[in-house]
Length: 297
Image (tube, rainbow, N blue to C red; front, side, top):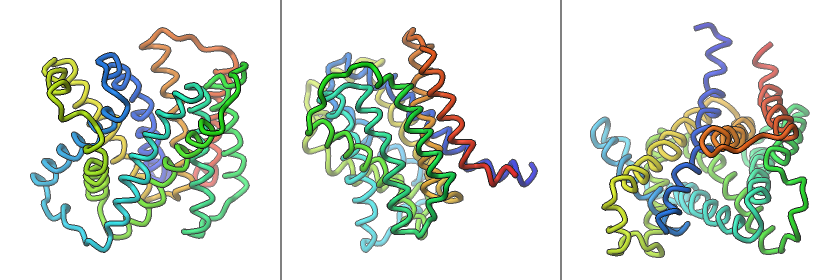
């Protein structure tokens, strides 16, 4: 493998994580059909992920479970302020506005990452980043079909939608700090552990009704799949990629998520693409190439 190919690996890891995140709708849709609430689904996602990661770390390297209590704020940041808050805000925005509006508001996240990365890490806001952000936001609008009349958006809906973008961005920021001391697997485990401790008391997944639903093998496999693919594996790829590239660039590269979600909609749910949606996909892809321009030279 030559040097140029090696330098692109972190970007492929982040893009792969984004593709897995884009597939989350397959699992969530199935669980919604079983009448689980959004809070229940988030609780399943983080708690099962925490259990799987604990088993895995115990088997391969128990030392990765060691952390300092002084760093608890980092895992509160990734687990509660990011994972729990982001998911709750995102699902609420879907209900208060619409799916397309919620997606666009969610992807204000890279803007927050670039700004906070400038404040906390001193990362430059280059012209490439500015152009990539612009192309990406326009592309997401086109892919999400926000351009038709979508009705009046309430201030509450707007606030929780932008809140989802902010919560989404916080994972990049807190993870970047935590990576100075801990391995990605350690960060992931404590992220999901803290998130679980926070959300389990307010969910209904420990009730007899939830247990009865999980007796269905399809539901059980869906919950485990939700924990493995768009959660543990996706966040591991993203966090590993984040070790080698700037948080702002990683977040923009992860904008391939809505593109992945669109293709899943086409092939799994029989949705069709308009010419404007295709144009949006091209813009998102161009933005990813744009931020890698220096590396490709």
